[in-house]
Length: 189
Image (cartoon, rainbow, N blue to C red; front, side, top):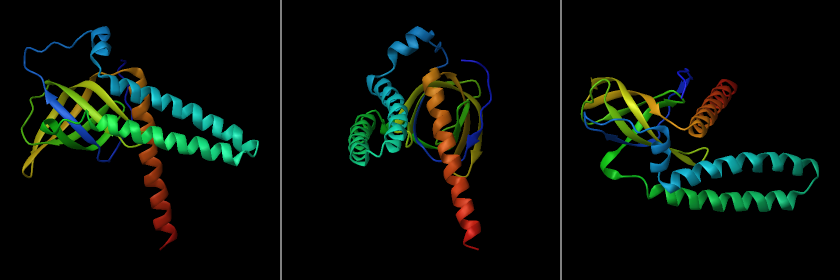
């Protein structure tokens, strides 16, 4: 993964943050990809299929095949429902928290306990759109006491390129929603 900065958006995602011990050594890229649970790999593949389905939908709209489009949308909804169920099984309540911002290079969340700068964590981020989940390792950048807990900022340490693309897509989607809402708010004044 290259050191590249991407924008972050303020949005809450369900996340699992599992601190690794001080002796933990990051696995190689090959070992990392081999340890990724199957539902995360399937979710990534489904998201790639969603892109193809979007392109097909555009082509079909030009051909005026509304029933075929409706069928594709229904099948896609069923697959996303099944995918959401599979991914929910990967959400470990013991390590559950929520992000307050995320992007393709950093994410931030709340924690009950402080984490040391430089500490490695295993992270799972559950995206709403696209319906997917990210399995990665991250490194603590900062951990600051706030209210009754801690605000922790992370930098991805091991992340597949396809998952980084999903994070970019998810952040752009949230940014578009925010901009649409701002536009509506301005129009309603």
